[in-house]
Length: 426
Ligand SMILES: Cc1cc2nc3c(=O)[nH]c(=O)nc-3n(C[C@H](O)[C@H](O)[C@H](O)COP(=O)(O)OP(=O)(O)OC[C@H]3O[C@@H](n4cnc5c(N)ncnc54)[C@H](O)[C@@H]3O)c2cc1C
Image (cartoon, rainbow, N blue to C red; front, top):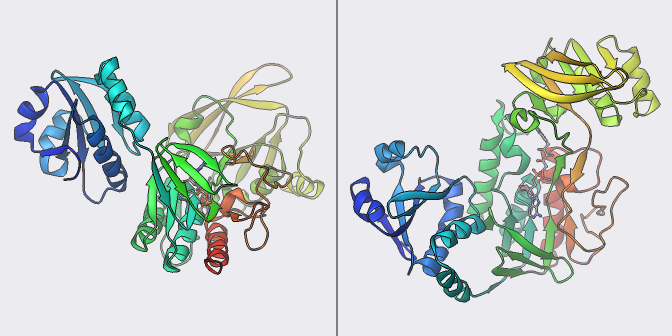
């Protein structure tokens, strides 16, 4: 095992953890992508902090009883100990270097922290292409580029997979007869990229992105320099910011009719919104649902007139004007509620339905770029047919790009086009 790390078994736990001054323990598993993402950071930090803190690894599947005793239910889980007592945060999932360092620092005194920080040496890595974002668009670009023998580094503040990893089921991606759990589809894509040689820097803090210089700084220590940068950072649903929204997201609340409307055959659903996408998606949902109640804050819809007329003519659609959602509730499977306020009277009431769709817009993930990038009227990156942006060597692919339809198939198509365009220049 590289770094100053000791692999131990449950039998050694008392001596190596409880009886030691300061210890950090990583419960890991095999075939666990987040564990792999953590391994390199853990090793590097063991070199840095190893003179002050004992770094321990425990194989979770081989030490199940100990893991259960410590309530360690997922891998990786990192625990911090001082004089045998659990201290600090219990870290799990996509663990960032910054979160580890924060907890390690809190085990040290001020002088020790200074000593450790003085030892940090910046790293510079050269690559042909940096791909920003590990969703379907970025992974596909990575696969094609790596197969063209380009050195590709994929950077993502989260674990690879993008939206697909959090999508319950994907039934419209070609190649699979049965619907695929989103996390499996994204796992296949990510493993394929890795097998082809794409290097990952995932679950990292993206400290700085300089598109002009084609360089990205991660975790404040590694500067990656490249000839090309592919922006595949996707978009995110504009949140309403209401109680229950985060909790039931993907579990009663959906942001994608193409993906989820089919689960509401002959059911009643509620749609929040009143613009083009809300009305067009509501019309689409009526192919499945028996009733769609649109909750809209204004007295008139904001969608184009043709879509409005279609909605008014559709007997399955009912529109509740001048009402605003205040809270989401879940009473059981396919039993959702939304508390709405009548903006004229201030009266609150709960509307019930099998599911809720929120269409109040998406936001492109472009906040990390300070350069002048050409945007469309909705703020998405305006790339040309080859996915090239207005800055030399910069490409935009997937949901972050200006386009009519945002799906996995269109994201992978963009990634393909950018990669082939780039590989012809390498
Ligand atoms: C709830 C939901 C369900 C869906 N279901 C389906 C479906 O069934 N079928 C279908 O075809 N489509 C579906 N879609 C649409 C589909 O998921 C997207 O079109 C697709 O994921 C877009 O891929 P992408 O790679 O462009 O972006 P994303 O999948 O959004 O990936 C972007 C990645 O970039 C990373 N990132 C963000 N900021 C930065 C940064 N500054 N630096 C580096 N990385 C960054 C993110 O962490 C993320 O991993 C669904 C969408 C939603 C919201």
